[in-house]
Figure 1 (cartoon, one colour):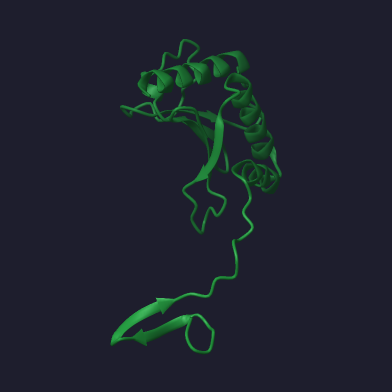
Figure 2 (figure 1 turned 90 degrees about the vertical axis):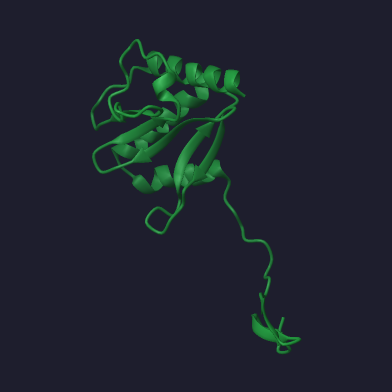
Length: 155
C-alpha cells in the first residue's frame, strides 16, 4: 500500500513497485453454478439442449468433473467442459447448434455415426445438435463411456 492506504504504484529504493489493495476473496460461483447460469441465460432451445446433454453426460459418467474454461469478454461464462482423467468433451452453443466436441473423438469408435462435425481433424470429433433434432441417448452415453475408458487407460 502507498502511504495514503490506496492501491497504486510507488517508489521504493529507487525502483518502481506495484501495490494492490486487497478487498477479500471475490465470491465465486462453482463450475456447476456457472453452467446452470449459462443454460438459464440462453433461455431457448439451446439451453434446453445443453441441459439435456449435460444430464446424459452425468448419467454416463457419474464421477465426471464439470469446469468452465476459456473465458473471454465475448463469452464471460466460458465453455462448459466435462472431464474424467482428462477432457471428455466440451459444450459450446451457437445460434443454430449446440456442439459437443470430444477431445479425443478421432480415437473413439462411433458405430452409431453420431459424429457429424469436425471430421477432418486427427484428434477431435464433434456432434452438432440442432433445434428440433433428436438425441440418440443410448449411443451418446456409450460414446461418453468410451471417452472415459480411453482417458483412464491413457492416465
